[in-house]
Length: 113
Figure 1 (cartoon, rainbow, N blue to C red):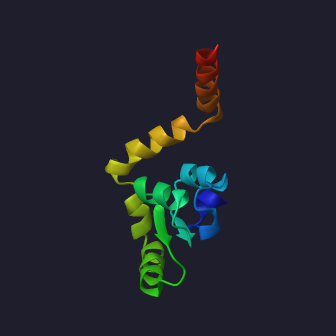
Figure 2 (figure 1 turned 135 degrees about the horizontal axis):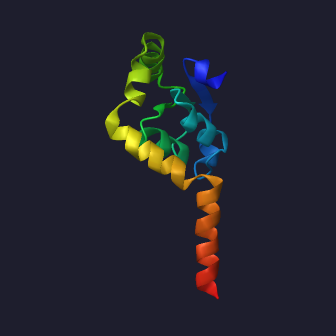
């Protein structure tokens, strides 16, 4: 269902600016634009750096309107296919797979011995 959507909504208040919700990984892997509202922290940085969609404060009506227009016209999907972001997005997703995270954790633990 996510992959058939025009966009995925993620509401993430500023109280959690250092917290990355688990849902963002699923959203990033879906290939569907993310509309992130009310975040100024890590999630916003991820959305911007990986070209995943839009990160907007809910009180920024002009930017919200622009994002909704981009979603409705399909421009948001075009941005997702930008080659500049595809490589970075794939690498980021690979680094955050359970296997990759487990390997990195074991490497850290091995160095502590």
